[in-house]
Amino acid sequence: MVNFSDFALHKTIQQAIHDMGFEEPSPIQEQCIPKILEGVDLIGQAQTGTGKTAAFGLPLIEKMTNQNAVQAIVLTPTRELAIQVSGELRKIAKYKRVRTLPIYGGQSIGHQIRALKQGVQVVIGTPGRVLDHLRRKTLRLDQVKMLVLDEADEMLDMGFQEDIESIIQETSSDRQTLLFSATMPQEILRLARKYMNDPQTVAISRKEVTAPTIEQVYYKVFERSKLESLCRIIDSEDLELGIVFCRTKRGVDELTEALQERGYMASGLHGDLSQAQRDKVMKSFRDSTIELLVATDVAARGIDVGNVSHVINYDIPQDPESYVHRIGRTGRAGRKGIALTLVTPREMKQLRTIEKVSKSTLESRNVPSLEEVMERQQTLWKQQIVNLLAGDDDLTPFMQVVDQLKDNYPVEKIAAATLSLAFASSITFEEGDAYDFGDTGASKGMVRFFLNIGRNLELRPPDLVKEITELVGISSKAIGKIDIFENFTFIEVSQDVAPFVYEAMRHTRMKGKRINLEPAKPRVKRNQ
Ligand code: AMP
Image (cartoon, rainbow, N blue to C red; front, side, top):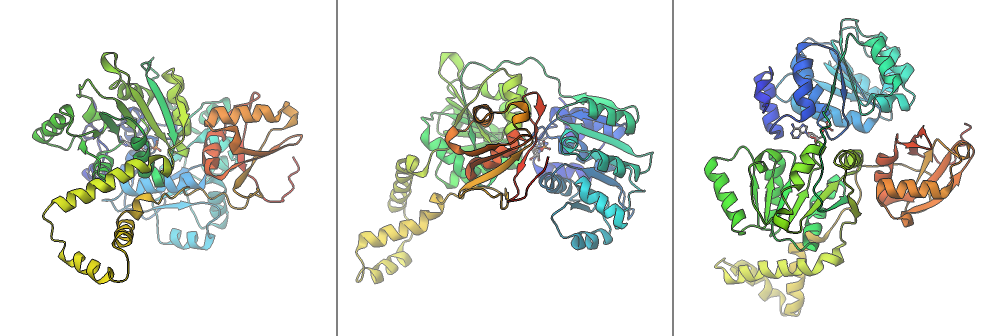
């Protein structure tokens, strides 16, 4: 087994990895990191969710010096990805004096110019805006030692090829070039041949894996309300004993604590625990004194417990093999097992890869509504109050408040108001996430998307509805008005599923053509 400590990474970076809570390198990292450190050009076939950002990010930050010049540039197709990559690189560079800056369209260029003037070593940007800065001479790339093309296939699909080539020409020819892409169409290989120096290719080996025949379900969730979604899912399930998987040690600690606070009997398991602590947790799991074991992949590896009723992927696994390993912990000895996976919009594609490689189909289900889980909530509240009443906590200061109020209000009402103060936070559920599609000219409650195919490819509304409902796992009721024109189409979908439609449908194939789906602009006539 490979550890992060096996890589020639400085201790400041090792410390950052530890802080991020990564336990062991993901398959793509295991293969990429040593090669990138060696200095070779590399093509990595990987998509979001596989740990590809850290695969190039760790060696990239390792190689930065404190020379005050842009030494690395990462090009990404979208501003969301630029921000995300920048955030991850910043965490990796926590103990090293390396400044990173995302630059993308839509943000004030003046602000970016000022930030660039302060001196940054790593720029993460979308091609259009990077080119804009190069033309204004507010960004210089002649000292760039490393160039990363992230999600290269998406960048080409979005028509950034020329921009990318212009940018590459501004960098010095002895740079190291890395290219990451989920797919490897001809144009990518051409780009690689033209601008890369004897590149090595790394792909996660797609070993034949077969998922066990157990009930497999996925839920579409938003990052922001993931915890709340998990609680509702748990509450609606007949759960005996469950293992909840998180990506990182930190994730395990945070989730365990949050679940305990909400009254679940949960314990965490990860590699930083001592043997004695591990044994204690495992014993309580075996004896069923806890109902949920929150664990990383590494920690769960040695677990052999027979009566696990549920495996819950709180974080989607980084590769299909790990999915199969995880869900194999339930459904043992002829018992019925259930595997539940939470999927955020950006992870939709990873979900489809897992399905394809593990030859399984995950049924889509909606996160239960509050009403559906209210009964369980009420039981939990009652339990907490009963515990308090039975305990020896000093309630005197609170009794005084009740005394003062009870002349004017009935005691039942005072009690209910107090409960609402205590538990209101557990029943608010913020929908949505940081997806802002702006004004798309849609009807109320809907988002309108533009699709670059139309009647020219004999697209008909039922085809589109079928494609979307199947790929995104939503009901056809979530789809609104569809206007098909000769070369393009407008389609409205309900706001709550729009981020999933956007992430799952962008750059897939329909009618033999790679399609592009983007938020529509209000009342702008396109002439295609
Ligand atoms: P990416 O595929 O780069 O978008 O990464 C997906 C998520 O996995 C991010 O939240 C990373 O922080 C996380 N991640 C990356 N590498 C690891 C690792 N070795 N162990 C645990 N989590 C990781």
